[in-house]
Length: 368
Image (cartoon, rainbow, N blue to C red; front, side, top):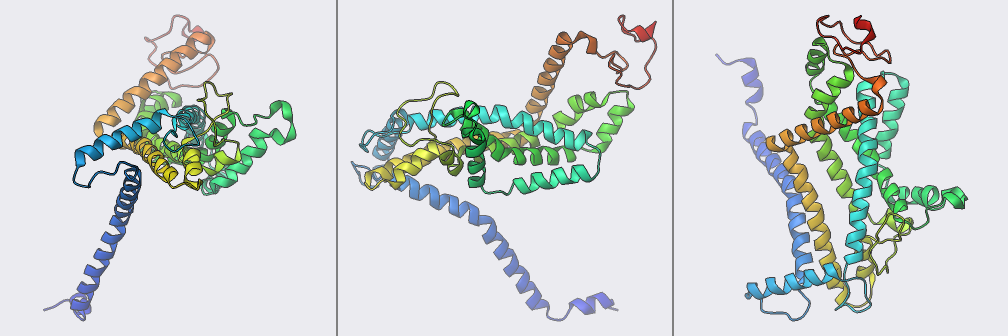
């Protein structure tokens, strides 16, 4: 005897199966669209980069590889020039690396700290919801808006000239840091939410303080996700052009910056400059710059993928544990009055769970 549910799904069974196959095919096409677009992009850029003379036949692969290597070496070690045969991206590569380091130093500690506070310390309420809504909205603001903000705030300092950074490297780094900061905060919060709450409760039940729970358990568990989000956000910042054009990244810098106070240019800015020049030979130079930029971005994405592997997670967890312990030891040496006793209490009045009376600190006045 057939069930009512079987009778309900029996009509038009062939048509429903056909729709299922068609839907699976559309999903596969959507999945492969990104791979196809990337392959077409790489192929067109590579063909443009290989179009400079001499042009050997297509079957001489060894000659193509040799010419391509010479071409990439030349544009990576040469500066901007009005002659296509002498033009290169050395100043832009060094400027982009400076921006990469400064954005990493500014945006990651600030964003991770903000995410930690919002997820672990901030009490739930209207203020927290307002802050998180603003951060989510800022993550979707176009980059040119951040460029205008950086121009007003950092480059011109609202017209207060003594604080204006002008066209310094600092202005570009701070503007790009503002651009990626909401993404870092959101990535940190999502990674912390993925850590099971039972891990926190177990550590607190064993007598650990909240900071010890975060330092020894929550952060090592969430670190691969945090680093993956931050690396991808920083790689996005390195590829941005519009904000840097607004805050004064020049197209014709012929020297490499040696400090954050120097004038600078960046790799995307130089690519944009060469691509807009009228001579056709500069298209080949711009294609070579695109390949250098893609190699830099793919290297950063490869690091993010490695951090997701079990080996990467272990290495990242050990790294954050060692760094946090080093920071804790430095803070204890600088502020000996803030040392934590065996039971988790501190002399600043931070409460801790009851401890074993046989484990006491000789300097603890409460142990007497």
